[in-house]
Structure formats: C-alpha cells, structure tokens
Amino acid sequence: EIKMDERQDNVNASEGGDSDSESSVWNDDDMSHDSDSEDGNESDEQGRFDFDIDDSRWEFDEATLRDIECNDPDITSLSIGWGADDTTHDWEKVGIAIGNNVYMHTLNVYFLNSSFCKGIARNRSLTNLQITEIDSFEGGVFADLLPFFEHNGNLRSLEISGCGDSDVGCREENIRSLISALSKTKSSLRRIDISCNRFSDEQAAKLIGSLDGHLNLTSIHIESNEIRGEACGALRKLLTNPGCKLKKLYLGSNGINDQCVPILTNAFNKNNTVKTISLGGELLPRRGRRKEDNPITIAGWHVFSSFLNNPNNLLEKLNLSCTNIDDESAKVLVNALVNTKMKSLDISSCESIGAAGYQ
Image (cartoon, rainbow, N blue to C red; front, side):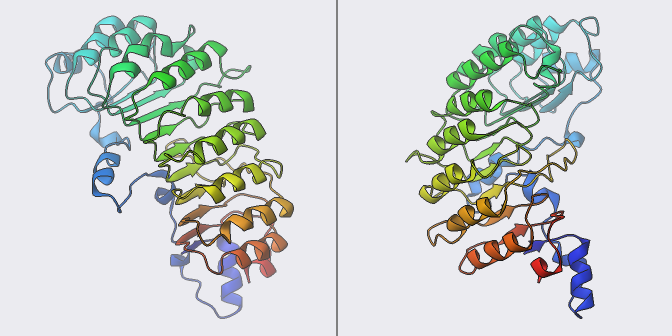
C-alpha cells in the first residue's frame, strides 16, 4: 500500500494506469492512532489512549464539578481549560475533585496553576493525561504533579505539547520538572507524545534519556522539535536496549539531517521490535498539518537504505512524506525495498520527486 499525491495519479493516467484514489490508502489515521491488532490486550488499552471529543465533557461548569465530586461513573473523560484563568473557577476545588475521582481515565487540560496541579496529583485512575500550552504556567508545572507520576500505576499515555510556544522556547524549569517526572513515572507507561514543543537537541536528549527505565513503551512521538545528533544518540541507546518493546517511532519535522541518519540507522539495524517509523512532516495528530521536513539528501537515504535492505528488520509502515526525496533518492529506496516486509509507504507531498522517480 503506497500513499502518493495527485502528481503520481497524473503519471498513472498518462500511461493508462489506474488513477483510482484508492492508491492513496494510507490515510492520516494510520499514522495518528496507536492500535495494534496483533495483541488484543494492547489494542484494548490503546483504544482508550486516543482522545475522543465526543466522549468528553468540554463545557466544564458547576454541574460537571458536582458529578466529578460524586464519582459519577459516566464521566470517564474530561477536557478543561479553554480560555481559563485563575478567576474562572475555584481551581483548588476542581483539582481535588479530579484527584479523588476513581472513574476518570482521560484528562485533557489547557490551564494549570499550582493548586490545581496539587489536587490532580492525588488521582490514581487516569490512564491518559494530555497537557497543552504548559508555558502559560511558570514555576515547573510537573513539580506539583510529581506524586501523580510517582504513584499512579495506571498511567498508559502521556501527551505534552505547547511547551515551547514562547519566543525563548520551553522554560527550563518546565524541562527540569518534566525530566524529573518521567524518571519517576511508573513503568506502566506505554505511549508518550512530546511533539510540538520546540525542544532543543540537548533538551530532547535529556528527555529521551529519562525514558531509559520505561521498557514497556511501545509508541514515542517526538515530531516538531529540534532533534539533531545528541537526541538521536539518546534514541539509539533506547532502541538498542535488550528490553526495548518500542513498535512505533514518530520523528517528523525535526530537521534530522545526513549526520543524524547513520546514528538512527545503526539503532534500527540493531533493534528487532520497531514496525512503524515516521520521518515525514505531514501529520501531527489533532494539531493540524505541518509541511516541514527532515532535510535528508541522497547521501542520507543511501545510509538509511541499508536498514530497509536488512532482512531482519520488522518494519511494516514507513512515512517519508514532505521529505527531500528526489528521483535518484527514490531509486535508492525502491531498490532497498525489494525484499521488504513493508505493508504501507507514504511518500506524499515529496515535491522533488518527478515522473522518473514515481515510475
């Protein structure tokens, strides 16, 4: 299954081929959701990870607060904080209500202050925590949440975004408190998404290093940061750990270049668990589309092809959309895919590929 753009449909049509839109079979959901049909238990768990707007209370009011305080079993997902400030609600009361709730498994928050976080830190039922725009809160947001990360053995998915929305990038106190939280989080964590934070190479390397003890991780999203050699080295250490269970790795829109490719390729060649890799800049789940690429040239693709040509790799899905693949690079990659186990390949929006490359 190959996902291409309209230019390839035109090439097919001019040659009398099938231009049916089904040739673009890899839709956005294929790269945005983490469901594994191979493992029924994992699939059941992962189904709870993906935040569903229709399954959540978006209009937070006093009635919702009372339901949470009463442990209403119908409230399992909650999104809170759009347009909120310190005067919108009694945040200490709200945090304590969430902290004492035993039925809620998904929480998506857009506003944080210290008293709110300290209340949430009591919670032990959440399996999916999503925090957005945390730079609106100064003081190391995760320091107040530390008891939650230390003692909640049910947490399976953690999503952090908006940490670098300020002009200076992510606040150092938030980075330090996040690293501390991750290093102390229970090993139950299966999925982490730290995309769209403008983490520097050094910051990303430290964050990835804090995941060393999380050997049950199956999915890591690090799109739209500023990963370079240091962070790639941290990923290599993680991927080559004998206990690694990682199946999905998303690295799009990071500026990964030819110098980074040998580091990652070395790790992929030694890893026997990864089945999905995204180096493309096309998709960031629930946050819109970013047409930024990893500037890998033909020299880098030559190196990467050694992994694709490795008969021991288990890769099934590869996203290279919005990258700098040209006609020559396409030939290199196609030759490496002859004996591959690949099921899905996304090369849409690769603007340097011409008719020769598609053929």
